[in-house]
Image 1: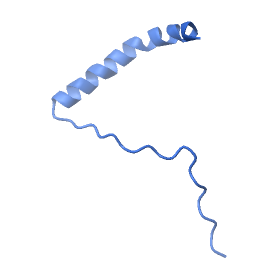
Image 2: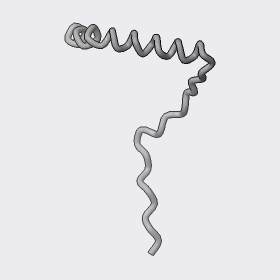
Image 3: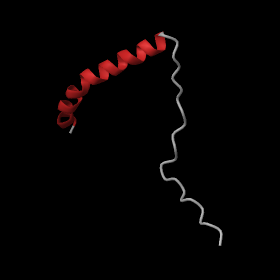
Image 4: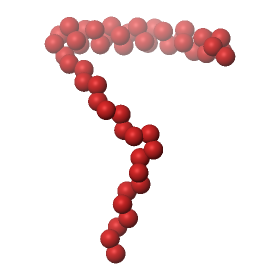
Length: 51
């Protein structure tokens, strides 16, 4: 199964390297990257409106 996806990885490698370079440039210029909490996988439905 890995070999099926290898072509996709190789196709996107240039984009990934470009993004990586841009992130490095941003951080070098004093930018901060915050890692936020992920939303829950199965969020609860919104509460029912009051009657």
